[in-house]
Amino acid sequence: MIKTDILIIGAGPTGLFTVFEAGLLKLKTHLIDALPQPGGQCAEIYPKKPIYDIPGFPEVLAGDLVDNLMEQIKPFEPGFTLGERAETIEKLEDDTFLVTTNRGTKHNAPVVAIAGGLGSFEPRKPPIPNIADFEDKGVAYIIRDPEVYRDKKVVISGGGDSALDWSIFLADVASEVTLVHRRNEFRGALDSVEKVAELSKLGKINLVTEAEVKELRGEEYLTGVNIKHKTKGDIAIDTDYFIPLFGLSPKLGPIANWGLEIEKNAIKVDNSYDYQTNIPGIYAIGDVNTYRGKLKLILSGFHEATLMCQSAYQRIHPDKKYVMKYTTVGGVEGFDGSKKEAKKETVKAII
Image (cartoon, rainbow, N blue to C red; front, side):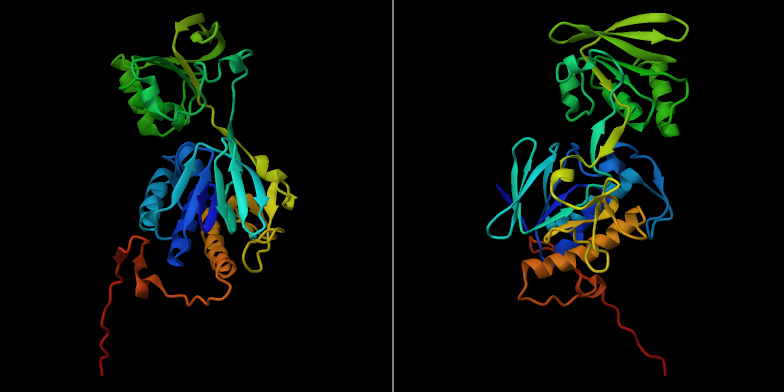
């Protein structure tokens, strides 16, 4: 049983910033995310995509934003349950909540903050008839541990950042990497496209464009794939793993069955105060919520997280009054006692 003050469902930018705001209030946090690493869409789908509307950053790559947020929350030592989906929620007699994941991990907290972005992400699967037969037997939709592919033959499909980045990374891990894409042009970052082309010339990546994987071969485990090429016809490749990286499809998932008020696949909240749902103690912040005038922006999620944490503090400590102090005055102190002192400057009046 994992116990915490605020249980955050979703480790995207809004969920991560919630850790910081809760930490300023001396509230402990734990995050659950179905993805294998923090960052949500920013880390999984477009880590090299520039973002232009984060205050103080004229331009910041999505992946760098996640890295900065992780550095910012380090003093508050949040816990993480990654690669698991929040499945069920139960209200206990002590007015706290018990959240259990699809793998049976139990979490207990008086406050639950749903910061799941557009929902839990499910992989977009290619229309290959027998692909389900090889799932976890050679077919994977997310790379959790690159060492699994050490000295193995790997076929990757896709044309975005994820397919490009993993092809580049695994070129130094796997014994053979084949990247298959149905077009000649890629959707990923230019430097990644150039790197793949360079590795292809060096023979470290077998690049097959204008082609699609149409069939999977094997009995109990995957042993090969059949590729349909636009001009060359059928190509058979022996492989240990097939990894189609076609992005993730957002769905509200099991949270839709938690008794929350849902409107157009989003959770309705009270935006007049604290972004609480129709169930007291459960909040929804970021892209997962909806209210009149809602804007699905990261900066909006940051704002919602700040107000939510103030309300959560009052729920957890109803007899205490929190006096807000600006970080420029009070600094930032982590749970380990370390403190970043605010810089103090003396202002002299000129008479």
